[in-house]
Length: 386
Ligand SMILES: Nc1nc2c(ncn2[C@@H]2O[C@H](COP(=O)(O)OP(=O)(O)OP(=O)(O)O)[C@@H](O)[C@H]2O)c(=O)[nH]1
View 1 (cartoon, rainbow, N blue to C red):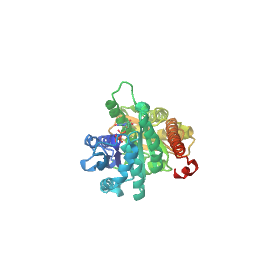
View 2 (view 1 turned 90 degrees about the vertical axis):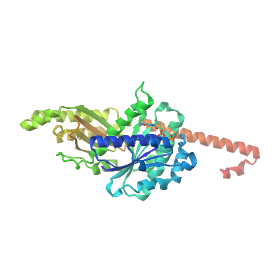
View 3 (view 1 turned 90 degrees about the horizontal axis):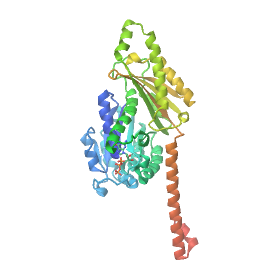
View 4 (view 1 turned 180 degrees about the vertical axis):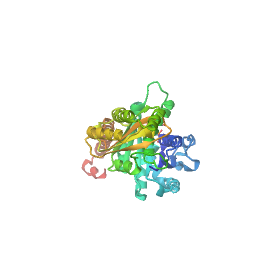
């Protein structure tokens, strides 16, 4: 599917940069336009692939290009103030060519976490195309402010977008890795999963024959209905020459069985392995299974069996399936998109943090009211003031 990508904040910009590199590496054709928005000049300068004219600096009048320092209320504020600057870049997007907008942002910082929901609301008001979010959750050890930002912003972002795809940094970090090296690796993991999914809906620009190619409407239908989504991926290296050999000899009965079993097992691994956001799979409302790899290694039966297995696992009757044939990768893989998931421990934890923060704010406010009332000795009349 064709996307207009908008990377908001540092994490958002870097992930969009990586999406561009991945799209050109696999000849995916899913990026129609890519824009980066930030309140920090240095972050915009550090990008490699987003075109210079599509890097938008916001909040200059307030923070002078230095970022909002993890203050996500300020992030939201400067986005509202400078929404015309962002719209200026979006005006260059050939919107009739795209299937959807995708806003990518880290939920723990200030600019992306505060600004992404504001932009989503703005885009939904102006365009009819779906507006999706890709939210990156902070590591649990990053500190209170990051968790609090994520807790607050997550709820707003889910509400403003048509579907929020989520990636949790916390479950993807390795011990002993430097922060920078870690992010580079994590960003590659992010774009491989989501990038293959989006590229799958963009087949047709290649000439490969496929039994049942996924198209963008299947991705859009799986994401429709809103809520939160997570993606799983598993792959295996294959010897593409062996597949071709069996096609030439016409004796592919054995390989067919092997391909079917391999795909069923990959769908299971993708679903039960590490998801971008771990969840109880049975809570998914909708799903999509995509088989990727050299066409000679893909067969309808494999995807169908995997799809049926996912139907049983989720109890959902809305599980779609299809192929994404790739000729340049010696890998067969399964991508599983689970949409509308509700049983997600990490999100429950974030909601608790948000409620606690709200309670604390109310307690502080109530105490302030009491103190003020005592001071003025006019308790009853003051309630109306708050
Ligand atoms: N996956 C990933 N996460 C990142 C990356 N850089 C930062 N993060 C995460 O994003 C959060 C911080 O958000 P940033 O995007 O750096 O912040 P920002 O939106 O630019 O906002 P300010 O810096 O406060 O102006 C942290 O929770 C990090 O975990 C990255 O390259 N990849």
